[in-house]
Length: 265
Image (cartoon, rainbow, N blue to C red; front, top):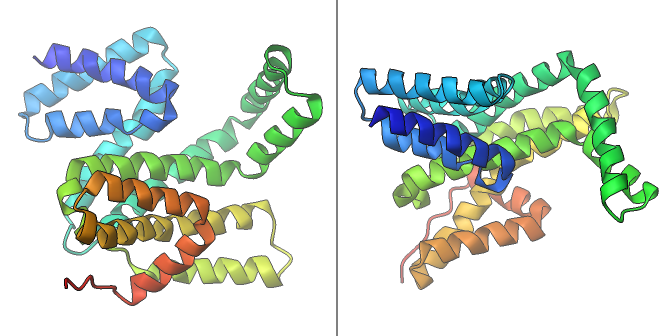
């Protein structure tokens, strides 16, 4: 049983890293499968997964432990404070902690990563029909917004992990208004000091994410009162947030301080 579980975990790791939109599947499966398992099963399943992933490529262990195991561990730790820390805050805290770790790792390995970045750029020019100008623009955007993109990916992964683990309580999830404090501080630094730049712009975009997620929940809650199809309502909430993220941020931020209650007719 635990041997099969370990092998499945290793297989899901490959799926999660090769298809980013399915990155939530691995932490979801591990938590769902092992949360109530005995200690022996947890240890053996994790050891088998580590050995299998390390056998494929030893460097994969950095991503597996640094991202996916960290999501799992922080899920259990923050679950102990479920009455004190709101769901969206737990998601955002998890993403922040792991994201900071990822950014530190990238900083200390920036030389090798820059070389790989340039090689990837050359590969795109060779294997696609994009022009030099189009590739340069795309890669410049990635470089300029790399911090935000890392956190956006992590927030998506953690959010979907939490959603599929606890979707029966989704409409009860809340977010704290306190994330607005660092947002306002960084906003004024960006706007009125000489310290503004790509980093502060990225931090502002990162701090918006928690309220954009909260907006999706509010929209889904309102629609669900009429439609009674959670998956459809959730999809509509995500779609609206994607087409108008600035509005979603403002609405979600205001709603976090002024709790919106759905009144049934």
